[in-house]
Amino acid sequence: MEKSFVFFLRTKIISGKDMVREIPLELERTKSKKPMIVTDKILKEKTNVISKVEEVLDGREYIIFDEVKPDSECSIVDKAYRIAKENGVDSIISVGGGSSIDTAKAVCILYEKGGKIKDHPGVYLLSKETVPHIAVPTTAGTGSEVSHVAVIKDEEEKRKLVYADFYLMPSVAILDPTLTISMPHSVTAHTGMDALTHCIESIHSTVNNPVSDAFALHGIKIIFENLPRVLENPSDIEARQNMQVAAMMGGAAFTNAQVGVVHAIAHSLGAIYGIPHGLANSLMLPYGMSFNLPECPRYKLIAQSIGINESDPEKAGKKLIEKIVEFIKKIGLPTTLKETKIVKKEDFKKIAELSIGDPSIISNPRFAIMEEAIIEILEKAWDGII
Image (cartoon, rainbow, N blue to C red; front, side):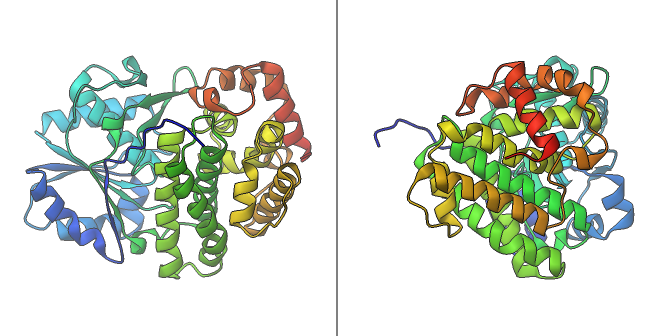
Protein backbone atom coordinates (compact mmCIF):
# COMPACT_ATOMS: atom_id res chain seq x y z
CA MET A 1 0.00 0.00 0.00
CA GLU A 2 1.40 3.35 -1.05
CA LYS A 3 0.20 6.01 1.37
CA SER A 4 1.52 9.30 2.71
CA PHE A 5 0.96 9.92 6.40
CA VAL A 6 2.24 11.66 9.52
CA PHE A 7 2.38 10.01 12.94
CA PHE A 8 3.09 12.31 15.87
CA LEU A 9 3.49 11.57 19.58
CA ARG A 10 5.23 14.24 21.67
CA THR A 11 4.35 12.87 25.11
CA LYS A 12 6.93 11.06 27.24
CA ILE A 13 5.38 7.85 28.63
CA ILE A 14 6.33 6.63 32.11
CA SER A 15 4.57 3.39 33.09
CA GLY A 16 4.77 1.20 36.18
CA LYS A 17 3.76 0.62 39.77
CA ASP A 18 4.36 3.66 42.02
CA MET A 19 5.83 5.68 39.12
CA VAL A 20 3.98 8.73 40.45
CA ARG A 21 7.30 9.29 42.26
CA GLU A 22 8.73 10.54 38.96
CA ILE A 23 6.68 13.76 39.07
CA PRO A 24 9.38 15.87 40.84
CA LEU A 25 12.03 14.80 38.32
CA GLU A 26 9.78 15.81 35.44
CA LEU A 27 9.06 19.17 37.08
CA GLU A 28 12.80 19.75 37.40
CA ARG A 29 13.35 18.73 33.78
CA THR A 30 10.88 21.40 32.62
CA LYS A 31 12.17 23.95 35.16
CA SER A 32 8.72 24.22 36.74
CA LYS A 33 8.60 26.09 40.04
CA LYS A 34 4.91 26.15 40.99
CA PRO A 35 2.49 23.57 39.56
CA MET A 36 -1.27 23.46 39.94
CA ILE A 37 -2.89 20.06 40.50
CA VAL A 38 -6.12 19.88 38.48
CA THR A 39 -8.49 17.21 39.81
CA ASP A 40 -11.97 16.56 41.21
CA LYS A 41 -13.37 16.55 44.72
CA ILE A 42 -14.04 12.81 44.79
CA LEU A 43 -10.38 11.99 44.20
CA LYS A 44 -9.33 14.70 46.62
CA GLU A 45 -11.68 13.85 49.47
CA LYS A 46 -12.62 10.18 49.10
CA THR A 47 -9.44 8.47 47.87
CA ASN A 48 -5.74 8.57 48.66
CA VAL A 49 -4.75 9.42 45.09
CA ILE A 50 -4.15 13.15 45.61
CA SER A 51 -2.36 12.54 48.89
CA LYS A 52 0.06 10.26 46.99
CA VAL A 53 0.80 13.10 44.59
CA GLU A 54 1.18 15.56 47.45
CA GLU A 55 3.63 13.21 49.18
CA VAL A 56 6.01 13.22 46.22
CA LEU A 57 5.70 17.02 45.97
CA ASP A 58 6.91 17.38 49.56
CA GLY A 59 8.88 20.61 49.93
CA ARG A 60 7.58 22.12 46.68
CA GLU A 61 5.16 24.99 46.31
CA TYR A 62 1.91 24.01 44.59
CA ILE A 63 -1.81 24.68 44.62
CA ILE A 64 -4.81 22.41 44.07
CA PHE A 65 -7.85 23.07 41.91
CA ASP A 66 -10.38 20.32 42.69
CA GLU A 67 -13.57 21.58 41.04
CA VAL A 68 -13.54 19.47 37.88
CA LYS A 69 -16.84 17.71 37.11
CA PRO A 70 -17.62 14.84 34.74
CA ASP A 71 -17.86 16.39 31.27
CA SER A 72 -15.94 19.46 32.37
CA GLU A 73 -17.60 22.76 31.57
CA CYS A 74 -16.41 26.07 30.15
CA SER A 75 -17.02 27.91 33.43
CA ILE A 76 -14.80 25.43 35.28
CA VAL A 77 -11.95 25.90 32.81
CA ASP A 78 -12.23 29.68 33.03
CA LYS A 79 -12.15 29.56 36.82
CA ALA A 80 -9.15 27.21 36.89
CA TYR A 81 -7.22 29.50 34.53
CA ARG A 82 -8.05 32.59 36.58
CA ILE A 83 -6.84 30.92 39.79
CA ALA A 84 -3.69 29.66 38.07
CA LYS A 85 -2.77 33.13 36.81
CA GLU A 86 -3.55 34.80 40.13
CA ASN A 87 -1.23 32.35 41.91
CA GLY A 88 1.70 32.46 39.49
CA VAL A 89 1.32 28.85 38.36
CA ASP A 90 3.86 27.82 35.71
CA SER A 91 2.89 24.18 35.11
CA ILE A 92 -0.08 21.82 35.40
CA ILE A 93 -0.39 18.35 36.91
CA SER A 94 -3.72 16.82 35.89
CA VAL A 95 -4.81 13.91 38.08
CA GLY A 96 -7.97 12.03 37.21
CA GLY A 97 -9.95 10.85 34.22
CA GLY A 98 -10.45 12.51 30.87
CA SER A 99 -12.36 15.43 32.36
CA SER A 100 -9.45 16.49 34.57
CA ILE A 101 -6.90 16.04 31.80
CA ASP A 102 -9.06 17.89 29.26
CA THR A 103 -9.65 20.71 31.76
CA ALA A 104 -5.89 21.03 32.16
CA LYS A 105 -5.41 21.08 28.38
CA ALA A 106 -8.00 23.84 28.09
CA VAL A 107 -6.22 25.85 30.78
CA CYS A 108 -3.05 25.46 28.72
CA ILE A 109 -4.89 26.93 25.73
CA LEU A 110 -5.84 29.99 27.75
CA TYR A 111 -2.21 30.50 28.78
CA GLU A 112 -1.57 31.45 25.15
CA LYS A 113 -4.94 32.69 23.92
CA GLY A 114 -6.36 34.41 27.02
CA GLY A 115 -10.04 35.30 27.33
CA LYS A 116 -12.60 32.54 27.87
CA ILE A 117 -12.33 28.98 26.62
CA LYS A 118 -15.66 29.26 24.79
CA ASP A 119 -13.99 31.78 22.46
CA HIS A 120 -11.44 29.31 21.07
CA PRO A 121 -12.94 26.04 19.77
CA GLY A 122 -11.33 24.59 16.66
CA VAL A 123 -8.13 23.03 15.41
CA TYR A 124 -4.50 24.16 15.28
CA LEU A 125 -5.14 26.77 17.93
CA LEU A 126 -1.64 27.26 19.28
CA SER A 127 1.54 28.69 17.82
CA LYS A 128 3.96 27.13 20.32
CA GLU A 129 4.21 24.96 23.41
CA THR A 130 2.33 26.33 26.40
CA VAL A 131 3.00 25.58 30.07
CA PRO A 132 4.32 22.09 30.88
CA HIS A 133 1.54 19.60 31.56
CA ILE A 134 2.09 16.30 33.39
CA ALA A 135 -0.94 14.03 32.99
CA VAL A 136 -1.55 11.38 35.65
CA PRO A 137 -4.59 9.34 34.55
CA THR A 138 -6.57 7.49 37.20
CA THR A 139 -8.75 5.73 34.64
CA ALA A 140 -7.82 3.52 31.71
CA GLY A 141 -9.81 4.66 28.74
CA THR A 142 -9.81 8.21 27.45
CA GLY A 143 -6.25 8.28 26.12
CA SER A 144 -6.35 11.99 26.82
CA GLU A 145 -2.92 11.73 28.42
CA VAL A 146 -1.39 11.42 24.93
CA SER A 147 -4.08 12.86 22.67
CA HIS A 148 -4.19 16.22 20.91
CA VAL A 149 -7.88 16.79 21.73
CA ALA A 150 -9.82 18.34 24.59
CA VAL A 151 -13.61 18.21 24.79
CA ILE A 152 -15.32 20.79 27.01
CA LYS A 153 -19.06 21.14 27.56
CA ASP A 154 -20.77 24.44 26.83
CA GLU A 155 -23.24 24.24 29.68
CA GLU A 156 -25.34 27.13 28.38
CA GLU A 157 -25.94 25.74 24.88
CA LYS A 158 -25.76 22.07 25.91
CA ARG A 159 -23.19 21.07 23.34
CA LYS A 160 -19.62 19.86 23.43
CA LEU A 161 -16.81 22.03 22.12
CA VAL A 162 -13.79 20.33 20.56
CA TYR A 163 -10.25 21.73 20.75
CA ALA A 164 -7.45 20.06 18.80
CA ASP A 165 -3.78 20.86 18.43
CA PHE A 166 -0.61 18.78 18.69
CA TYR A 167 0.69 21.29 21.26
CA LEU A 168 -2.16 20.13 23.51
CA MET A 169 -0.50 16.75 24.01
CA PRO A 170 0.77 16.64 27.60
CA SER A 171 4.51 16.86 28.10
CA VAL A 172 4.53 13.70 30.21
CA ALA A 173 2.05 10.90 30.92
CA ILE A 174 2.58 8.91 34.10
CA LEU A 175 0.74 5.58 33.98
CA ASP A 176 0.74 4.34 37.58
CA PRO A 177 -1.71 1.42 37.88
CA THR A 178 -1.92 1.77 41.66
CA LEU A 179 -3.83 5.02 41.12
CA THR A 180 -6.63 3.24 39.25
CA ILE A 181 -7.52 0.78 42.03
CA SER A 182 -10.13 3.13 43.51
CA MET A 183 -12.05 3.27 40.23
CA PRO A 184 -15.64 2.03 40.66
CA HIS A 185 -16.65 -1.04 38.66
CA SER A 186 -18.86 1.01 36.33
CA VAL A 187 -16.12 3.54 35.58
CA THR A 188 -13.65 0.74 34.87
CA ALA A 189 -16.08 -0.78 32.37
CA HIS A 190 -17.03 2.53 30.75
CA THR A 191 -13.47 3.73 30.31
CA GLY A 192 -12.34 0.35 29.02
CA MET A 193 -14.97 0.54 26.31
CA ASP A 194 -13.88 4.10 25.54
CA ALA A 195 -10.37 2.78 24.87
CA LEU A 196 -11.72 -0.03 22.70
CA THR A 197 -13.77 2.43 20.66
CA HIS A 198 -10.73 4.65 20.11
CA CYS A 199 -8.79 1.70 18.78
CA ILE A 200 -11.56 0.42 16.51
CA GLU A 201 -12.50 3.81 15.08
CA SER A 202 -8.87 4.63 14.33
CA ILE A 203 -8.72 1.41 12.29
CA HIS A 204 -11.82 2.27 10.24
CA SER A 205 -11.02 5.98 9.86
CA THR A 206 -10.39 7.25 6.36
CA VAL A 207 -7.03 8.66 7.52
CA ASN A 208 -5.70 5.49 9.15
CA ASN A 209 -2.02 4.71 8.74
CA PRO A 210 0.24 1.69 9.40
CA VAL A 211 1.65 3.08 12.67
CA SER A 212 -1.73 3.96 14.13
CA ASP A 213 -2.93 0.52 13.01
CA ALA A 214 -0.14 -1.11 15.01
CA PHE A 215 -1.03 0.82 18.16
CA ALA A 216 -4.75 0.17 17.73
CA LEU A 217 -4.61 -3.52 16.90
CA HIS A 218 -2.38 -4.36 19.84
CA GLY A 219 -4.51 -2.16 22.07
CA ILE A 220 -7.63 -4.11 21.05
CA LYS A 221 -5.95 -7.42 21.88
CA ILE A 222 -4.86 -6.13 25.31
CA ILE A 223 -8.36 -4.84 26.13
CA PHE A 224 -10.10 -8.09 25.21
CA GLU A 225 -7.65 -10.00 27.40
CA ASN A 226 -7.45 -7.63 30.38
CA LEU A 227 -10.69 -5.67 30.88
CA PRO A 228 -12.63 -8.73 32.13
CA ARG A 229 -9.67 -9.56 34.41
CA VAL A 230 -9.75 -6.12 36.03
CA LEU A 231 -13.51 -6.23 36.52
CA GLU A 232 -13.31 -9.67 38.13
CA ASN A 233 -10.31 -8.77 40.31
CA PRO A 234 -9.92 -5.01 40.90
CA SER A 235 -6.57 -5.51 42.69
CA ASP A 236 -4.94 -7.16 39.65
CA ILE A 237 -2.15 -4.62 39.16
CA GLU A 238 -0.74 -6.33 36.07
CA ALA A 239 -4.10 -6.21 34.29
CA ARG A 240 -4.57 -2.59 35.38
CA GLN A 241 -1.21 -1.60 33.96
CA ASN A 242 -2.05 -3.43 30.74
CA MET A 243 -5.32 -1.50 30.50
CA GLN A 244 -3.53 1.82 31.06
CA VAL A 245 -1.09 0.96 28.28
CA ALA A 246 -3.95 -0.06 25.96
CA ALA A 247 -5.79 3.20 26.68
CA MET A 248 -2.63 5.16 25.92
CA MET A 249 -2.17 3.23 22.66
CA GLY A 250 -5.77 3.98 21.70
CA GLY A 251 -5.18 7.65 22.44
CA ALA A 252 -2.05 7.72 20.29
CA ALA A 253 -3.85 5.87 17.50
CA PHE A 254 -6.91 8.11 17.26
CA THR A 255 -4.84 11.26 17.66
CA ASN A 256 -3.13 10.39 14.39
CA ALA A 257 -5.93 8.53 12.59
CA GLN A 258 -9.06 10.26 13.99
CA VAL A 259 -12.36 8.57 14.88
CA GLY A 260 -15.82 8.52 13.31
CA VAL A 261 -19.58 8.36 13.63
CA VAL A 262 -19.57 6.47 16.94
CA HIS A 263 -17.79 9.33 18.66
CA ALA A 264 -19.93 11.92 16.91
CA ILE A 265 -23.11 10.38 18.32
CA ALA A 266 -21.52 9.65 21.70
CA HIS A 267 -20.58 13.32 22.10
CA SER A 268 -24.19 14.26 21.38
CA LEU A 269 -25.59 11.75 23.87
CA GLY A 270 -23.24 13.11 26.50
CA ALA A 271 -24.17 16.71 25.79
CA ILE A 272 -27.94 16.10 25.88
CA TYR A 273 -28.29 13.47 28.60
CA GLY A 274 -25.03 13.56 30.54
CA ILE A 275 -24.32 9.92 29.68
CA PRO A 276 -20.66 9.13 30.52
CA HIS A 277 -18.58 9.25 27.36
CA GLY A 278 -17.28 5.69 27.62
CA LEU A 279 -20.79 4.30 28.10
CA ALA A 280 -22.08 6.38 25.17
CA ASN A 281 -19.31 4.98 22.97
CA SER A 282 -20.08 1.46 24.15
CA LEU A 283 -23.78 1.89 23.35
CA MET A 284 -23.10 3.12 19.82
CA LEU A 285 -20.05 1.05 18.84
CA PRO A 286 -21.76 -2.08 17.40
CA TYR A 287 -24.32 -0.01 15.48
CA GLY A 288 -21.81 2.47 14.10
CA MET A 289 -19.70 -0.48 12.95
CA SER A 290 -22.73 -2.16 11.38
CA PHE A 291 -23.51 1.05 9.49
CA ASN A 292 -19.91 1.24 8.27
CA LEU A 293 -19.53 -2.44 7.38
CA PRO A 294 -20.33 -2.07 3.64
CA GLU A 295 -17.42 0.39 3.32
CA CYS A 296 -15.04 -1.15 5.82
CA PRO A 297 -13.25 -4.36 4.82
CA ARG A 298 -10.59 -3.32 7.35
CA TYR A 299 -12.73 -4.80 10.13
CA LYS A 300 -11.13 -8.07 9.07
CA LEU A 301 -7.86 -6.82 10.63
CA ILE A 302 -9.57 -6.36 13.99
CA ALA A 303 -11.30 -9.73 13.73
CA GLN A 304 -7.96 -11.44 13.17
CA SER A 305 -6.41 -9.64 16.15
CA ILE A 306 -8.91 -11.30 18.53
CA GLY A 307 -8.80 -14.74 16.95
CA ILE A 308 -11.66 -14.68 14.45
CA ASN A 309 -10.52 -16.72 11.46
CA GLU A 310 -12.64 -15.71 8.50
CA SER A 311 -11.22 -14.94 5.06
CA ASP A 312 -14.24 -13.05 3.71
CA PRO A 313 -14.03 -9.40 4.96
CA GLU A 314 -17.81 -8.91 5.27
CA LYS A 315 -18.32 -12.17 7.18
CA ALA A 316 -15.33 -11.34 9.39
CA GLY A 317 -16.82 -7.93 10.10
CA LYS A 318 -20.21 -9.41 11.03
CA LYS A 319 -18.61 -11.94 13.38
CA LEU A 320 -16.53 -9.17 14.91
CA ILE A 321 -19.60 -7.03 15.63
CA GLU A 322 -21.36 -10.01 17.21
CA LYS A 323 -18.24 -10.66 19.33
CA ILE A 324 -18.21 -7.04 20.52
CA VAL A 325 -21.88 -7.25 21.56
CA GLU A 326 -21.05 -10.42 23.53
CA PHE A 327 -18.07 -8.65 25.12
CA ILE A 328 -20.22 -5.67 26.18
CA LYS A 329 -22.73 -8.05 27.78
CA LYS A 330 -19.90 -9.94 29.49
CA ILE A 331 -18.64 -6.81 31.23
CA GLY A 332 -22.16 -5.93 32.35
CA LEU A 333 -23.05 -2.93 30.20
CA PRO A 334 -26.32 -2.28 28.31
CA THR A 335 -26.36 -3.00 24.60
CA THR A 336 -29.33 -0.85 23.52
CA LEU A 337 -30.39 2.76 23.94
CA LYS A 338 -33.76 1.54 25.21
CA GLU A 339 -32.06 -0.02 28.25
CA THR A 340 -30.64 3.32 29.40
CA LYS A 341 -34.13 4.64 30.26
CA ILE A 342 -32.65 8.11 29.65
CA VAL A 343 -32.47 8.45 25.89
CA LYS A 344 -35.76 9.40 24.23
CA LYS A 345 -36.78 8.47 20.69
CA GLU A 346 -38.38 11.89 20.23
CA ASP A 347 -34.89 13.40 20.65
CA PHE A 348 -33.38 11.47 17.74
CA LYS A 349 -33.61 14.45 15.39
CA LYS A 350 -31.86 16.69 17.91
CA ILE A 351 -29.15 14.05 18.47
CA ALA A 352 -28.70 13.76 14.71
CA GLU A 353 -28.40 17.53 14.26
CA LEU A 354 -25.63 17.71 16.84
CA SER A 355 -23.87 14.62 15.49
CA ILE A 356 -23.58 15.80 11.91
CA GLY A 357 -21.90 18.97 13.16
CA ASP A 358 -19.34 17.05 15.21
CA PRO A 359 -15.80 17.04 13.73
CA SER A 360 -15.41 13.33 14.51
CA ILE A 361 -17.80 12.40 11.73
CA ILE A 362 -15.60 13.78 8.94
CA SER A 363 -13.22 10.80 8.87
CA ASN A 364 -15.93 8.12 9.05
CA PRO A 365 -15.47 5.50 6.28
CA ARG A 366 -19.10 5.70 5.13
CA PHE A 367 -20.63 9.10 4.45
CA ALA A 368 -22.78 9.91 7.49
CA ILE A 369 -23.22 13.67 7.45
CA MET A 370 -26.99 13.36 6.98
CA GLU A 371 -29.69 13.38 9.64
CA GLU A 372 -31.32 10.30 8.14
CA ALA A 373 -28.08 8.30 8.44
CA ILE A 374 -27.69 9.13 12.12
CA ILE A 375 -31.36 8.42 12.82
CA GLU A 376 -30.99 5.04 11.09
CA ILE A 377 -28.11 4.18 13.44
CA LEU A 378 -30.02 5.42 16.49
CA GLU A 379 -33.12 3.40 15.63
CA LYS A 380 -31.08 0.21 15.34
CA ALA A 381 -29.27 1.03 18.57
CA TRP A 382 -32.66 1.50 20.25
CA ASP A 383 -33.84 -1.99 19.34
CA GLY A 384 -30.47 -3.78 19.27
CA ILE A 385 -30.47 -4.57 15.54
CA ILE A 386 -27.01 -5.22 14.15
